[in-house]
Image 1 (cartoon, rainbow, N blue to C red):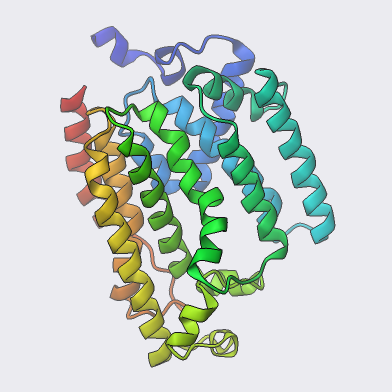
Image 2: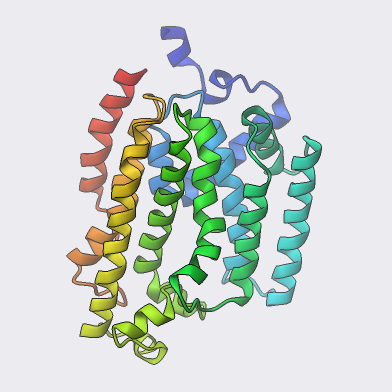
Length: 305
């Protein structure tokens, strides 16, 4: 056991091929660079599970970068072509079971090992493609088409790696993924307006008296506050519904997902803490809160191993 604890993550996961190790290392780099909270939660998993979660993150992040790189001089058409070309290549690699792509190699290996359905990756790429042209969603049901591919499928991809005792874990994983995404939408209203997008359902905003013009004025009004409160209650409701499903995961995986749930959904607590001033402040989980969540989760993770 002592020897196993001293092993690096890739060796612990049985990944020995040099090119494959390089691909997993690149996915881990992307995760540590861009997915601060996600990466912190991943560290709570047993070493032998972490590389596979990094591979899923690397794929999602790379696609996201193509779509949302504001520094890029590419037109929407050129971005669409770049996303389609890379996405089609990775999907083709997944079907063939091998890849030469620097991100695709690790992803294909992960999908092969855990028998993850390729449809999840098709759905993800469909949602990333929607981001290039869709600027608003009228209803929550409309938004769910996007959120299924951008977030729910991430939960579905994760379950085989995390291990589960019951098929109900998949339903919980979807709900938690959606809760995470909605929390991000609430936090990122200002940033998304810069990209010409509003993710919060237009008809729901209207019910609270909120218009595009009001959002573009970037001043928090009682109407905007009311609309945000409604969306926050939905995040908490989804989080509650998903919580029982976490108990269906392998004991060694639960601390990671509990911490992720607490930290990601905790974004909405931070929105409340800054009194909904989302246009002038970015709601972020404080270091103190991260430590408050991470330390007991770490001790729990060690016990579970």
